[in-house]
Image: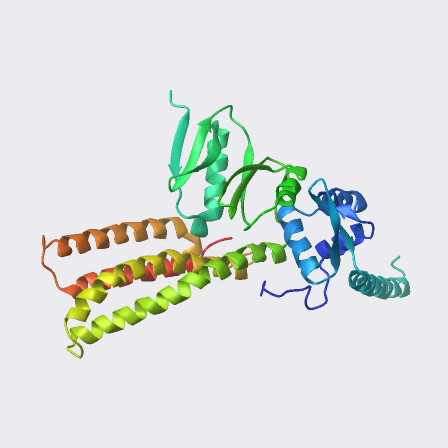
Length: 110
Length: 241
């Protein structure tokens, strides 16, 4: 079912992953989209409605926090809890890559 | 030549995707969405443009919300009560929702809002119907039948206009874009036309009976209305996101 809340289950979707990554440095919300596109070299982008909902969800889950407002534009940054979740996800992704590389190497595919 | 045109909406809860592509078609002919009109949209004549339209539900949208859309290339066209917002963008601009999770959230919030009215009003409708049934069968005085028959009408109207969208939002929240393709989804448009037609007939019959212009057994009316209701429920359950 589409109603699974991946965030509550401790999973980071690609969208959350990229948002958290771009908020390692505090940022205006609207700059997140651009920073994600630059980071991923245009391979990943997040739509404005998805971004707005995701930010609300990440705030509710205390993975990011409001860092203040400048000219009525909100600035967000990652929290410690967010950092932990991000590191856990990176570890998981690294293990997945290592696993694949091991198999590919042993089969001499790489 | 008139430079303003009004078009009807078929109900955004049921035909969101259809309506948005209809607006795109009009824009290609030079009729650009200007705002919401009475039960529909207001279009203004301009140069033909290739535009995509998207609808989002967001209560108490703040400035940041509209800023995100602008930054992504989506222009805010119009809103109803800071609740429903329509945006337009030239072709090639990425969609406003890019993942299933957040798109489901859009419909879940609408479902939760409407549920607060739809559930109590359906309960009230059922209770009223039960009282009328009791009075009809002489368990309670006949005056109750008259009173509750009058009260039933607004209750039914509220239930229909909140309950059906509620079902539809629930269906959309649970569906992914690779919708199961069934008979109802495929023939949505023609079934909806049939439902509208049948509902009109039912209402005309009801009016004729109320004003004593014709005489007919109640069960005919009751079954026509039940058939309409069933059709609409099935349509609401089989909407395409």
